[in-house]
Length: 546
Image (cartoon, rainbow, N blue to C red; front, side, top):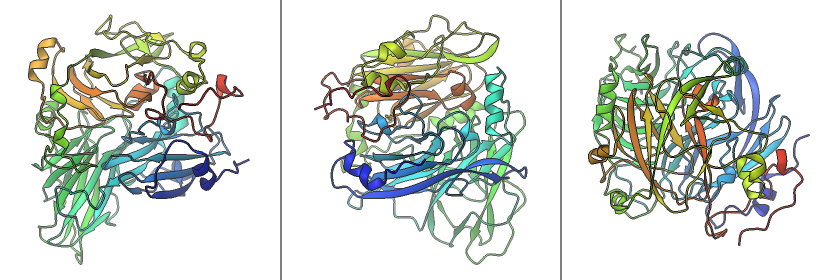
């Protein structure tokens, strides 16, 4: 039976968000439905009958209230890629922080997009649901009084690109559970379509400039995005304003979002937008149409060619720069935060590996292949029963084995980070495939990348001035990437591979950031409507934060 709770009651009872900032409300019904984006009928997961799901259009500091009704025959959760959930990991929607919404039940998410701007997306975080849909765009507009470093566009478009599988999401999960890989995708989609029709996705008027927010919502494949006959001015990525360079195409790795400005300065007709796979022997391509208003001319059949090799992609990354003079969510310039002058208090080096445990394929970080349990780690910690559910810091800050089919163990992978410390994290990738990593609850500064193994000498190559603050970063084959950040957001936060097979089979961990003050200044209490499951079910509430 569906819960009787409604958004108004939740607002009265939640302790997580305060203040008089505006509220926006959504009621979402999550159902199965037949879709055929590659021409093959398959079971999709729809939100209010839509694939992809509805877009969320918000403004900095809005309170977002989403009442999710689960009409599936399996548990369900949504997570909000790039939304920092300040002091509020209760709303993060990951298996380590939240109990799933049972079939036939509902849950109301309530979170504030505090001090953020930019382009993001939401997605289903359990099992292989992401392979069936239930993802959509989430934009955070700047407040009217905050200057934006470009003129208002004529319109603002969301472009969700991603690889796609025609196998049912439950079949994909069974393949992984049996120790096999899901191998390569069947194709690529742009806003849920592969480009086999001539209906335009977007319309532009000659002479006007438009904003396109491009997010890679796929499962494993980096994609190159380009627009036939047009250049793109990069203005924002993962919630940060960038130096406004011009590009013919952009590599968008899994989990990343880019905003570009495109001016309709070509002959009035139709033009293709193109998303094609990178770092695969067989290139897969999806197209969509942009139509100039009033045009009835077909686009040229010759698609713009994409780049080749990962060296090109690395060089492109090196051109990305933080716009130091632009304001973000607050009036002060982004560059007023001098991350390069902060002393590093700890270095964590994470090396990914592919291994077999009990004869089955698994992935690991520093020899730990993560598994979830019946009790979310955040709940176990909050109810003071963590020692019954998991053990902190089974993984060392430096791997014991750095390459090859390394031995690994199956166990929950949780580490701690001291509140408000500045930490360097190095990702080292000995594989021949690209990696992509996302950290919930934060943005970070990717200060360096390079081939081979990372050493302390690698710090001499760091960009300590204007690296773009973001939440998802790639690691190229047999290469390393270094990031820096201050762990100032108390909560339980997932650090994961955005390559979904790898995440599902253990290439992830959780970081517990606890405030020693146990104060509402630093972290909110568990919301009254929080679902309880596993070992915390029926337990009395612990003392509240004050």
